[in-house]
Amino acid sequence: MPYKQEVPDIVLNKLTKLSRHKFASLVETFKHEYLLELKYPGKGRNIELVGTNKDIVGLGMDELRASVGLSSRFQLSPRLEAGGRVLWTFRRPEAALVPALFREELKEIRDVKSIFIREKHVGEVYEVECNQRDFAKVNAVVEDIQTKIQQLQSVEIQTEVATQRLAEEFRRKYRRHPLFQITTGGQMVKRFGENDQSILVKGAEKMVIHARQERYLDMGHHRWEEFVSTHTGRVGRRLRRKADPRALPADLVLKIRHKPGCETVIQTLVERDFILGFHMKKVGKRIKYIRISGNDDSILSLAVDGIRYFVNGSKEERKQFLWKFGKVVTVYHGREAENVKHLFRSKLHEIKNVNPSVTVGEEWKDLLDIKCPHQFFDKVNKIIKVIEIDLASCVSDRLVLQSPSEEDLIRKFVRWSVVDRWYCHKGKETDGQMAAIDFHGRNSEFLLEGKTAWTTFKMNPDTGRSDGPDGTPRSDRPPEGLHCPLCRKTFIQLLSSGERLVAAPCGHVFCRKCVEPRIELNRKCPQGCRPLVAPRDLLELRLTMDAGDKTPRRKQNVEGSTYNVNKLFQ
Image (cartoon, rainbow, N blue to C red; front, side, top):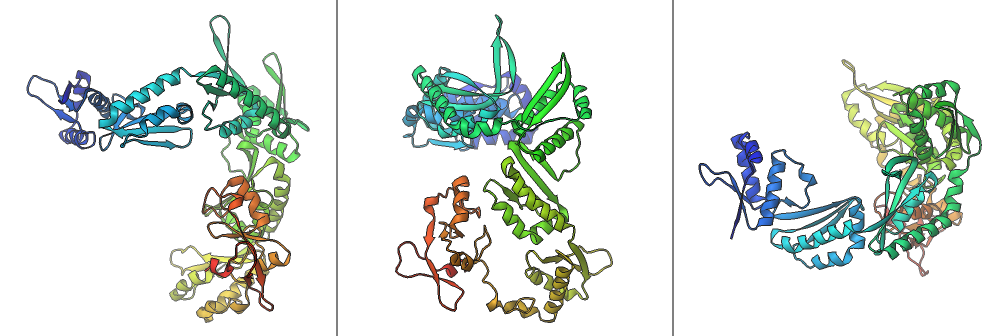
């Protein structure tokens, strides 16, 4: 028996203001997607919403209110979806609690044929979806879960700057524990007085432990204390060391003094983003001095520059600055970025090999950024200083093409750029002028080498099939790809020095010394092609070289995996 419900007057008033086309579209949406009908019984009666049962019609009425702008559709739970489906949504922090603490309840509805359960952005959104005919059974379980969530016992733990990272590690470690769960984030609030007045604790966040019983709550609290006592020696001492204090300049303190509340924001910036010590002395309400402390003079200088940049509200581009999580960022823009990518490729590989946590971003054409944590900044900065000195000697030149037919040759010739020496690209065309080719070299000698190669290439465009642009036979040049992409050493050099080669499941080959620390840190292939790779997934290659032949070949009759390396790069 179909169930009918009249549309309320406030919704009806909104519907009458819709155009005929929009109203017809709304009727079609309800009919084909939500399996509900909007009917007009006749003069003197309101529009009715007709469906299979009372609960589904109630959800349809909520959808109708959202359709005319009286509520937000994405705040509805449950809500109707296309194809006659019903969707329940749990958001943070409930999304982290449901899959772990309510496994038995979820098990009751997993046998429903139309059920579909998914987790988006782990710990952020958890969704349960089913057909309308199974709504009653699933809804009873979901309502039971929502009631039990309200009855969960919890305890809030204050986390300072030194332990906020530990709290996140602890949450990830016990993310699927069936007896207790942890949520992090949010400002720590302390209550006091008879009226429960509240105050925010500066520089502190809260970690909350949730459990269905008090004994499991005590278990989670005990595990946290053990975790902190084990890891504080490793992480805490490094973060809390406050050697080499530096006072902010007087003019900067004066600007902070005249901006109410600015000192609180700067304290958060220094302690939570820069991961440095912060000390401020006040006489009454007047700031006497502000000091920051760390282990490196250059880091402290960047911190002072970052504070000045924030206080002044400046928007100018900075080349080197402190960023979140205590990372130092060095940025190159425009032609400078292109020069570093092509002419200082070996230096960029040196930077990557300092530590797996040091990253070089080359995704954008006119932008290159280098990010490194505090503790590796000295090593990385030495390499960057060498790049800066050599960048000043880089030279460029433009050759105007003599005929339109040469434009087709540029695309072939660009591939012959020599890394760390020179490179070229097609220049931007200007009104009334022929197209040009732009050359960039590390110095004048390398620039001349590139232009000479272009002259040679124009005389014999088919040279590239057998020889390089400098006339060297291709058979005598090192085979492309037969090198470790991390340290850039050829397989011949690695085998000669006793290094071992390993292959990832995707087929990429590296030397073991380079790839193992990166996989242990990121759990994916360094080439970015496959996630969730562990060190145990690497296959060792047993290779040898024939006498008089510089090509590594597989070794027969040995233990372990064997590969023909040449086939991996075809």
